[in-house]
Length: 163
Image (cartoon, rainbow, N blue to C red; front, side, top):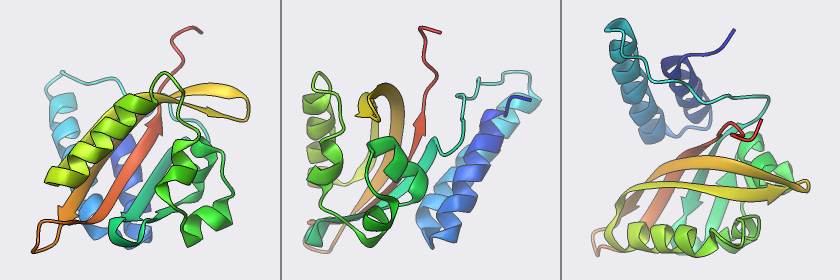
């Protein structure tokens, strides 16, 4: 049975909470409640197909350039799950971004790190020899000097429109 968008967002919130990402968990729960309200009014937004570990979360400590990924996110980027959980520089993950999309992703990341706030991007990654479309959303906090501090987020694999 297909999951609703509110169920997918609740799943991401629970996963974020299990990694002690309270802000991300809260944002995902708020989005789940909004989606549930739309579903109740008959205005349901179709949920993306989520298979296996195609949902993931990350937490980037920007000042030390250590990006920590859960196993689902590591799998999407084709990196070792234990190494990803311990933290790696963001460039280690950006290597998986499709060459035609890398500039778009870099620009979106740079703008978010510069100004703080919401990050949102849809792009392709190449992992295990497969091109996969993903949607990522996160939130970058700034310290008192307006320097990027933390940047947690969530990512989901989108359905392949060619099938």
